[in-house]
Image 1: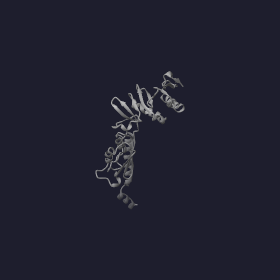
Image 2 (image 1 turned 60 degrees about the vertical axis):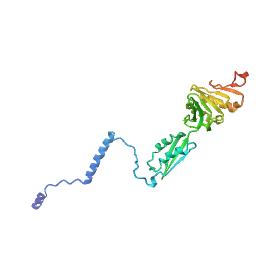
Image 3 (image 1 turned 120 degrees about the vertical axis):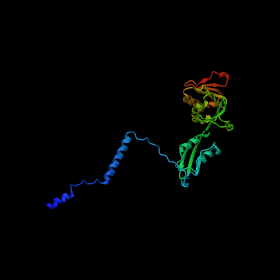
Length: 268
């Protein structure tokens, strides 16, 4: 008994066991997680988009733009394309911003839309959609080429577009897109349109074959156009001696023959 008591005095009271290190790490991780949770709850720092910055050294051959394919060109010249293509060669293909490249190509005079895609490992494909010429606008500043979409095209030489119809009147290019959509429903009439006059920037007067005048209404344009197309197809209206067709009255198609005796016209 005595030996046991002395042993207890020598050893002293039991000491607390040291906490394992893994608990300390877990506690530190928990504090960090709570702090991060607090930042998120408070809104945290603003998120930044992921970016890839190209290094100053040249990129390896497998990650470099070595080829640029441009498809869909009809009137855009090689001289216009070459500076844009040359600026892309040698760049890191993963760092190229397709939308920035698209915007640069869409600044070209004839390009309406551009689409850029990567063809790994080293090729960029640029697909272009050019404007489709629809008419020539005779404005106070001279002749302007107008696309079917209504956009004016800064073309210098209009000699190859002499067969297109001529637009007159203020606001004619802006309203021409709607007129083009109507002709898409009756393409056989598009080639026979000589001129289109915008009246007060409200409605159209159309001239076919240089002689027949068709007065379209300010409102209800589509129904009126369908009545005219039906008359052309069913009654061969363009083949008859008619000088004017008036569609300005809802539900009516007023035909005025070329003969003076029938100047009062007939209603059908």
